[in-house]
Length: 205
Image 1 (tube, rainbow, N blue to C red):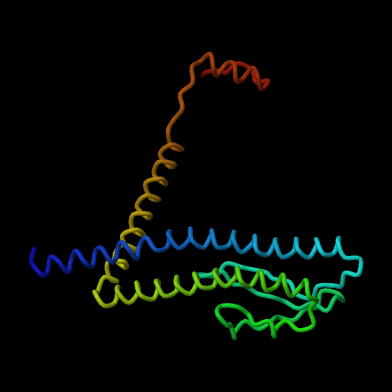
Image 2 (spheres, rainbow, N blue to C red; image 1 turned 180 degrees about the vertical axis):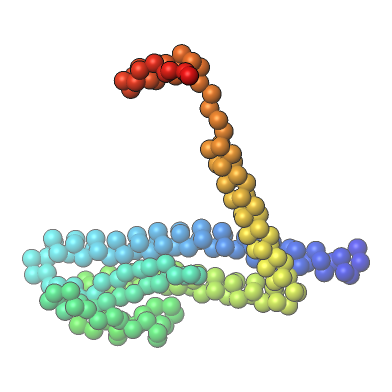
């Protein structure tokens, strides 16, 4: 196998890996969203447990929420005052070992602090995975550029659009041809139709 052939194969394989990334990442992110939702639910269940168990229960100030990003699960905490719906976001820019430091959660009760620490320990793994997914995406994009395989991806997109356009045109032709087909009825069917709708027998000149 000559060098040019090797480069062609390499470009194709790198393109194929990059092309599959979208579906693979989608499945990974779906799983991460489900896991993160469960962590949030567990936190809320812990709050309800202490609320029912402790007669001197004090309002828990912090509530986590998640949403799906393009390459990661976005985890947010908000601090509620307990009056109305007003809340403040908790800063997430200064993570320590992928966790929000407990100093960012002041004035919370001991059970609440314990629940936050437990949730953040689990969230840290989700954040780590998101970071690695970003690195994979960056590395694969770099490989496309280094090898010149990106044009294969762009060519496939053009071909895909042309194929979809051709398929749509064929479907439109089928619908048009179907609508233009003439349906033939027997004389008995015509007579039954006219009788059903109160029309007299058809007169022929």
